[in-house]
Amino acid sequence: MQHNEEKTCWNCPAALLKGNVDFRACGQSIAVIQNKISEEGLLIECTRRPELGMFEPSITFEQCPEWRETQYGYLLKEMRVMILGIDGYLGWTLALKIAKLGCRVSGIDNYLRRNAVAEKGSKSVVPIADMETRLKTAKEQHGVDIDFRELDLLDRDELAEYLREVQPEAVVHYGEIPSAPYSMVDAEHAIRTQHNNTLGTLGVLFLIKEICPEANILKLGTMGEYGTPLTGRPIFEGLFPADAVLTWRGQEWSMGGELTPRDPASFYHVSKVQDTFNVYEACKYWWLRSYDVMQGVIFGVHTEEVAAHPDLRTRLDVDEWFGTVINRFVAQAVLGIPLTVYGSGEQIRGYLALEDAMECMVRLLSSPPEPGQYDVVNQLSQLYKVKELAEIVARVGSRRHGLTVRIQRVENPRIEADEHPFLVVAKKLRENLGYQPKTPLEVEIDRMFTLLLQPRVRGRLESVRDTVFPKTWWSGEHKETMTLEVYEPGTHVMAGYSPDLVVSDHDGDE
Amino acid sequence: MEISDRDFDEKVLSSEKPVLLEYWASWCPPCHTIKKVLKKLDGEDTWFRVVTINVDRNLGYASKYSVKGVPCFMIFKQGELIHREVGARSEKQIRAMLNEHI
Ligand SMILES: NC(=O)c1ccc[n+]([C@@H]2O[C@H](COP(=O)([O-])OP(=O)(O)OC[C@H]3O[C@@H](n4cnc5c(N)ncnc54)[C@H](O)[C@@H]3O)[C@@H](O)[C@H]2O)c1
Image (cartoon, rainbow over all chains, first blue to last red):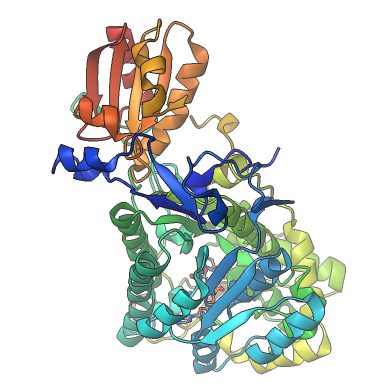
């Protein structure tokens, strides 16, 4: 059974509601509302099947010929998907994946990421082609046509024009500045991050409302929005579950469905929390539908589609601003730099492989929320301690690639809890959308070593060596980061809290 | 079970068993979270029926019963509305509501 076969027109972005009545206007005039309700109840029109005329929205995805069965559930045939930030690490990878699955993919980018990495004096260590070459190679290797427009999503007139042309049925919003350290450099970087991300997203929401309100909005948030509460209370999927109760002065209130607390970990993470509220409100005010994807840290280089040709590879950054931890550890191991663990290294975070992240996104595309529905998923495969990751990278590097890898603890330039409990709930993708993580950590780390050890990649890696060590202090101080200790893998025991991941109801959380 | 205005009469008003009905809306996150609990209740007991109905798509009875906010819980016995409560409720509170009124 496919996870989405029983969904109906209510979930389909091709369905146009006719005479949608807003109950919230009821108090205004019952008479007006009653006039609007036809004898038949509510009807819809299908933009893809106009021959049906007006009908009752009860056709299931399984019954509808516009929805085609794939290994990820039913998928709307030739679904028009626009990817904001299509030139990025995830955007490009997803573009190829869904184009191969038969989606009609379009995208925009203003190359902000390429420029910001250059500002740091770095570059993608895996060489990446320019967009023109990427598109041409995608056509040659995979037979897909991806449409691209170079534009800044803050340019609302241009974006409006493109949205009108494409009429997307889904919008994947990756187009933000994704770096915590970048946002902590100084006022200028913090303001640039929040301006680009928060105001960019707000403008996009207004445009979607005007032009394609039925589109399924996949908005990228991050697990970092939640922080790491020291009480150890569970990190639910954005909203409290039905059985969460607030007790105060002997009285009880249900918290079910309310937004859970957020405790962002940098000005970048604050921008994501602001997005969360803007998306949440837009769904409520305008009948938009969205998944707010609280994504864990992504690692890796591999999907079948990007690995098909060197000009299809996606970027990989290892500098202190844009490199994410596992990617950086592998690079450090290749460069012979002891792996930089911040502080105690007991910080716990959620992670998932690039390949698995892409599968999650396809599943979310295949199962749009209903008009007006704001939903949140915690998108991650596993929880790890940073110290533990260093050990695993060291092990794969030495056993499989003959490298000598050591680990160093450095002063923690971030202001964060070094040791904290972490109880994370990540059930929806698995229970409702049929996702199962497929890429073991060691396998992906091994693939990364293989790629980074290729002579031409290794050469590029050498040239960005100076950008690897952390220098950006959350305190705003400009000072060197000191190494506290260098040690051999396998010589340190894990202490403190154990990661706790709840992936199903049977884990005893409810 | 999800119902509409069209089968409201059959599933609620003419029901032999007492009915717990919930008005919900797609834009109401508490309404979505409570669905799981209602499904569970519906499955475990046979002496009453649990139904849900979307308020925006079914304004007929909603206006008749002057529904002003969601989630809105109503209990019907022999076609008669005997109790209503507006606002998110925990599973425990819903069970208490059922025990008191059915
Ligand atoms: N990579 C991760 O580990 C990770 C984890 C959690 C969340 N995320 C989120 O996922 C999204 C994508 O991440 P990524 O790693 O692919 O980052 P990325 O920087 O590689 O991709 C973002 C793309 O958006 C583009 N962009 C940014 N601002 C734009 C604007 N104003 N107009 C047009 N294009 C613009 C950039 O040029 C870039 O190509 C981001 O929102 C990020 O916060 C990433």
